[in-house]
Length: 347
Ligand code: DAU
Image (cartoon, rainbow, N blue to C red; front, side, top):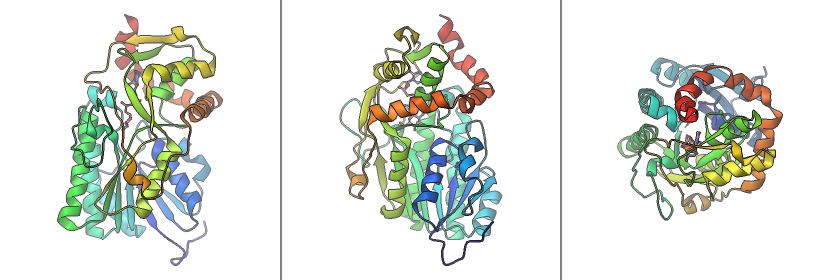
């Protein structure tokens, strides 16, 4: 493996959760974006962390993988020191709302304690920049208008509450220690390599298998969709040009009702509408999220994807990659699926 010279390395970044959906796309973007950044990926490889997402970059000379947990302070401290890390982007998180309703404790551990461990390790080692990848869910249900960064957090699920707690901790490091922190709050992200527990990949893969699409409640909930590549360029822009201590919303501006998205997926695949099954709603289900993204636009970022085209290419990716999701759906996923949907789909 060629050694990078000290002079050539622009940034020595620790990307946590880099084997996950958004993290793996971000990592690939960084490797493409400049030719000097060294990337260390720390991932615990829990159920949704997947090295298959990184096969194409696994032997890249500016990429290193470390198998470990962000809650393990010793591992984090040692790798910051060993790789002379100057920047951290924290993607590592438990992210699925339904799982947080089934088992909230793991969300507090990874999302809150894990962030606390990273912040403290970064402070002690003098890491230059710390970017926290957060979510629009911290604003809670938004019946009208669009959430601004200055709005108070009002999380409603254990997942959203854990992320909001982590955001507050990150901000406290700015106020208390002057740490150079940034927070991004992204909207609903979709694209290739998304673990099929989330709405779009679940519905696409179920439709491909001629299985029912379990639509919660009336299906009229609204989400603001963003393609993963747009989300990642947004995060990279904030990392490069954001003002420390600030929060930046990153949304695609493509508001759609769940029912419309489900129908669009079926249309792309030429499958019957009868596959849609209205099932018992998610507990505390937020009806709508929507982001005001004026602030990130002042940094020169804007999303590129058109929702319909990006949805189509995403659906086709799952159609073309049954081995990627087939492997996942035959493992731990089955037990989870039965637990969450078994009773819902049997009535
Ligand atoms: O808004 C950003 C957030 O988006 C991220 O921070 C979260 O990590 C991500 O999970 C996502 O949260 P949502 O709860 O909005 O995403 P999910 O894909 O779980 O669901 C999208 C919508 O689809 C939501 O209104 C619930 C609905 N849904 C979802 C599933 C899994 C269904 O109707 N049926 C389903 O089986």
